[in-house]
Length: 145
Image 1: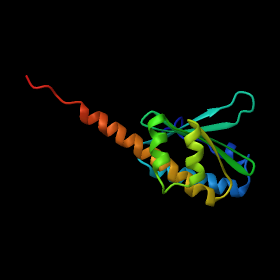
Image 2: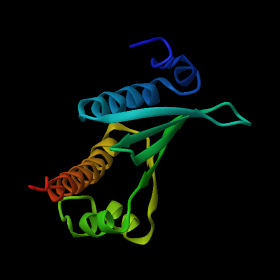
Image 3: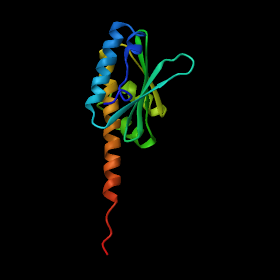
Image 4: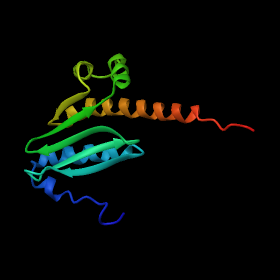
């Protein structure tokens, strides 16, 4: 990886508490385990704070801000994914309820206990995008002459 592609995370570590830094690292390692997920770092103009946007197949999964004692994640869905998430009984009912109301859902992560249900939600969205792209690829068939 070139220097331009690597992210200097010291600016995040300086702005958060040690427990939040551990939580951030845990979230980051879990996202790295998902094949094809990319992260883009944007900086807010006024505060210079980093905003991490996690994408899969050019679709935004979520973006997050890490500050102080918490991480604020904004989870993004489309209509079809929302329906699938609302029907999935294995997900936390509070998250399903939030997703059912809006295409953007704000989730606050303070402890590793909060991270589990959020990652379940991300994995459902990840699998939905995976199926969607696999379905589109199977529709494209070569034409025989």
